[in-house]
Length: 121
Ligand code: HEM
Image: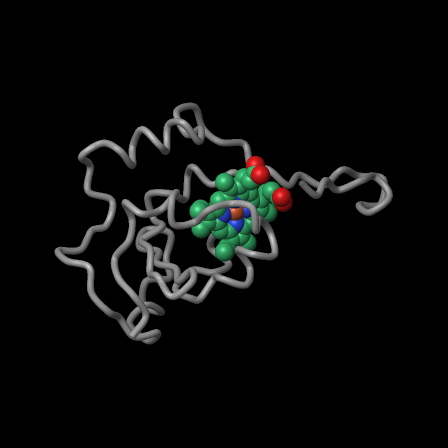
């Protein structure tokens, strides 16, 4: 995992991981996604255009495309180890490239399958 060295950050270690609130660990996320809580917020999984996805670009309503799949990442925001702000960079957009830049080793579909709302049409 890339870690900012003092040299890279001008003698000041840049925070890369967010301070998550208690109850927002990775295990807590797994627990939530395997419970019966509705994390999609839609009635059915269906195709959406990029334009439709782009309307969901707020912290209170945040969708993201990763590998042509569309996820409602709103419930994941407080669980994201990189922080809400980092996740919001791809709000309402195709975040595939950013996602791969930061953590190609993370499996987005296994983590977000309970948040799948559709596919890019
Ligand atoms: C597309 C916009 C995203 C950006 C810009 C972003 C950025 C980051 C950053 C800066 C970190 C801190 C660790 C590091 O720098 O190596 C991080 C960690 C992490 N993010 Fe994201 N992220 C994004 C989307 C997501 C999504 C959608 C998920 C859920 C599938 C996710 C899951 C994680 C996980 C699990 C870690 C911890 C990785 C580890 O411990 O190895 N991220 N992210």
